Image 1 (cartoon, rainbow, N blue to C red):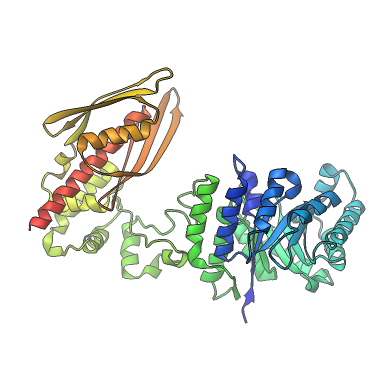
Image 2: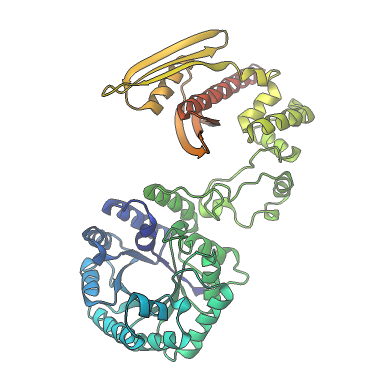
Length: 515
């Protein structure tokens, strides 16, 4: 029979500690609702003693969330415990959780807390007894457990359980342990603590050595039944256990992991994206499960293998986490199989184009641009002078003047075929959208700016500016990027690349419609 793994999310507490700006009460509530909808069992809403804002956030979340249990962090100090309980006083759940923690390693006891082991044991017991005045759900964390002597760890755990702790958390606070070592700690606790069966064993792993998910999975194989972590793995330093990784590992490797969670898998991608937006954190493209490249294939060998059987190179489907079906990245490493797939996906049979000729054109464009899109393939397949069409729109003149207390003055001249057209505007403060509107006016193409990424970096004495943008025209996404020493020039040149792509797209549509 499968055993349940409790998912404990600390995005609002440990995760927020890594953000450049604190989240507002409303932002924290939005995240809590997302976590509740995803099926998270326990939401650690904050550390109420740390600030009045954190207290109010915990209070608001406690009064709103119905289906996930609310938890607050507290040091082993009476004032922390009392404030945590006060913040959750009007919790909608039957009970709330108080999460107590104290350093248990010799390093923490001696150098951080300036105490001895007996003092720590006494504080731990008294704090659990104090917390029991407010709730029967008490979690106790032995901070820096990964570097705590096992005998001391077992003594503290036995005593806090004896006095009412119901969940024992073993944190690898600085991400120091490796899976074999961490599994030994979990096993020894289960074997040496006589009353361990009276509590749930939990783990909270950090990712300083990249071991967080590995340690978490090893722990549940050894007997832990609660995993603590954050969405996307955000948190102090290198971050926490990424909950989506643990959840999908349990689901994917059910052949060896006889466990289940209450998570709504199809909400994982949506929840991760929304939380990253609220936290203003970009998800790394190669992030497992939720990264933009997690289900992408660029190698021709991989693309061919996936077309024959997805399982050749995909152990998880994007649909299973609520993400859209991912197609291949068309690059110079792609083969003919990927091109055939894309052309067929767009509705073209092999009789309508010459694959060999198309492939040669494709390789030339891929070497030039890096990545090729579906609309590029159409142009290569059905336009004789596809490369020449890239020069229909060209930048002739650009002037941007910043006027003190009067915004900016912009003048743009574009070559449109055989004509040069000019547009200008004064007293504008929003350069990005103003330039976009001027380009639309000149080209008379009704497009929408979907996404723009601006990146600048210094290279010795030179500044390099990359603009990567996405534009929507006729329900189709058009992409471009450009690098120059001036980011506004990079931006406009990127827009011109898009304009030429849209023009070719329109010509192909008209040509095929007439046929």
